[in-house]
Length: 183
Image (cartoon, rainbow, N blue to C red; front, top):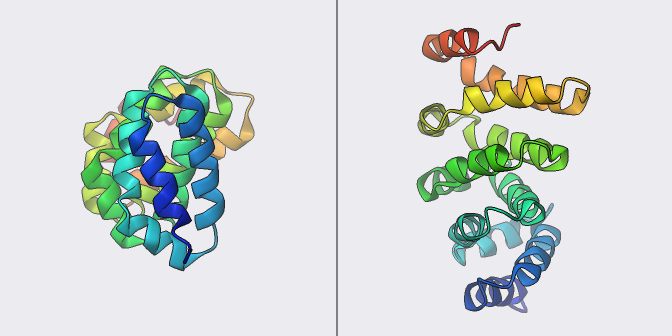
């Protein structure tokens, strides 16, 4: 908050982008500082947190744990926050989250965190819906559903994403049907 902790954490992430342990720990710290604290969300936003998160995701695609933390931060930032949804969409966060899902299809925690992040980034934002659509979100969602049929929480998350994508969007309804989302 007022002590500059968020800014200090983001600066450390930027100074040491190769240090995966630091990046993971930083995501946990940011999550804890911004969860339920709108003032800290605004400070993180002003400090460029979304760009840092996306850059970190792109720089460490092989690290599933780091991707989980990134998805959690994006989810918190995008929760009922239209400004951050726009920033996330413009920064490539949707594509980075979908890439993480594709890279780590077996990681159920990551898949669940990613679904929540995608839901929150596309809710009420038609431009982000189109970005998700262009990035192949429907195919990723269906593949995750098929790969984790026994996981009810993942199925819920997948259905929520498909619901948002299909709401008043005939093109996405057709794509979902063609991708096997109904079966």
